[in-house]
Length: 250
Ligand code: NDP
Ligand code: 8X3
Image 1 (cartoon, protein in one colour):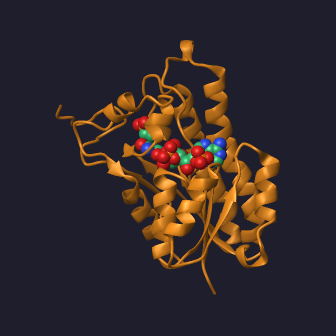
Image 2 (spheres, rainbow, N blue to C red; image 1 turned 90 degrees about the vertical axis):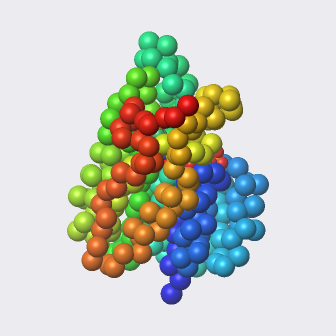
Image 3 (spheres, rainbow, N blue to C red; image 1 turned 180 degrees about the vertical axis):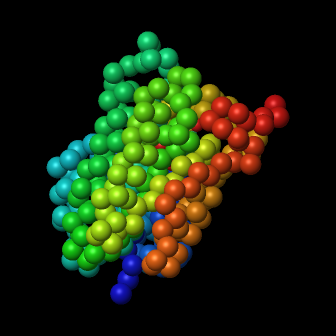
């Protein structure tokens, strides 16, 4: 029987690379995001396995529920859920942060992850199997200046991953957490609201991780034997030692 992986935020960066890597590993892919054309491009790029696309905003709980419960019968046996959709919005001291940015980060990174999990879990519970991979961050382990609400959202992902692992162990469902350091994707462009030059500066003077590095790790984690759960991994560029210590050669 085909193994099926659902990846949120598959239109860009880590999610897109993960969909491609899991397809190469033989998983049939459910790719989700808001940008339909990008999902269609991905569907055309992946030729080795079937790809089903779902366009929804993870903040919209009805849309999430409808999309998942409306999956065709052959796509309901989801083995792997990669809760990846998320971003930072802004980088500002708490005294000058904006409510819209705070809402976006908490609604997408935390509540969105919960909505998708809530919709997918019944499909795993009825089969007593499944593997959920939550994408946290080094920002969920260490707070850095101006990171306040983004860090809080990723600390929440850390707590939820641990809580989900405890609650779901009796159900035969594995829960794992991947906590990357600096990965060059569209992440900083989103954080800096389209300022490409400022975004590029984040990745200068050292070799950042690539989205494919995270995808490789996720593929390794989900292809371990049934009795193994790699519960939590932090993955950093060789030039990064903590959220704020980098060996930059500018
Ligand atoms: P990208 O900006 O490249 O990708 C973000 C993805 O999330 C896109 O596919 C986007 O799709 C999706 N997304 C964002 N908001 C929503 C929404 N409201 N509804 C549905 N999908 C949404 O960034 P990354 O690939 O770097 O980020 C992926 C994850 O990795 C995030 O959770 C991020 O916090 C985490 N991370 C990133 C690190 C980095 O350095 N890059 C380091 C540590 C963790 P669309 O816009 O089409 O909806
Ligand atoms: C993304 C990495 O350091 O910008 O989570 O928070 S960082």
